[in-house]
Image: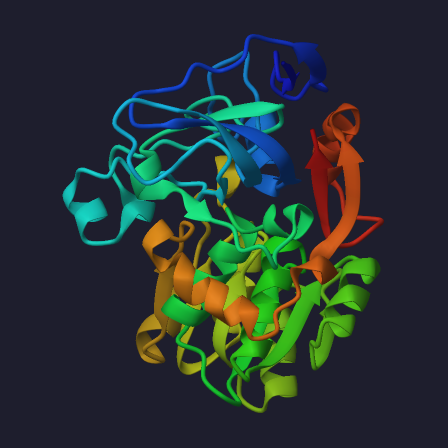
Length: 346
């Protein structure tokens, strides 16, 4: 099969002919119909998130089951599926509690094993992790279900507990941030989006952000002050959807008293331990949450929200073939010229 192969971190990967994946016991092999290009893939390519080389990235996908492994009872060849990017083992206490996103024995396509920038991908513990994709959701739109939209849904609806009229500040108007905007709007919240790319801010406006702030040249405290000003006292929920020290600090400083910060963007490498303003956290009784995807058991509620009118096609900025995927991956290291999610059609 053809796949995008990373042979050296930081060097542009290439499309190569490689062996097709073997079907694991309890798992499946999926023919990939569409897969998203995510900043998490960029982190792996850059070596911020260690992976064994050579490596095939890609972790958010839609496809059709090609082969079913021994012991799988819920799925058949030909079923159209997606999966959370964190696949639980299905046997531990976390998985039994419906918290597979923190499974200590998790697998992650594109990280712990070869991923979906390929014509086929192997997925583990299929009965526990796979999710049927509704017919109303196309392959291109569905490519965001495994990571970006699911991560945003958990951040806003489950951790954030957003209600009608609440203010939500989204720091970083990329795939996760724009998804969070859509979820927040669907729940009746008001959104202020912060970014440094004019194209991303324009798309955030088109998707319903009530206020957009250009953070270019602003210190985190200045960003926080601006959010307090435009929201009349600060956000009820603030998300760092980008993943950096400055955006994490700005997110915390954007909160009103007893507000909730959710860290959705990965903090890796030299950004792993930012100096959060814990004096503010204590004095204002702020809550800090990490979020790491969404368990398959929680997908029905997310899909119900989508059925009520969330249009994922508005997130898609470009659709490319496998040969264009390496350049699309490398482009995530700079502010986007074209906003929205890039989807690969293998």
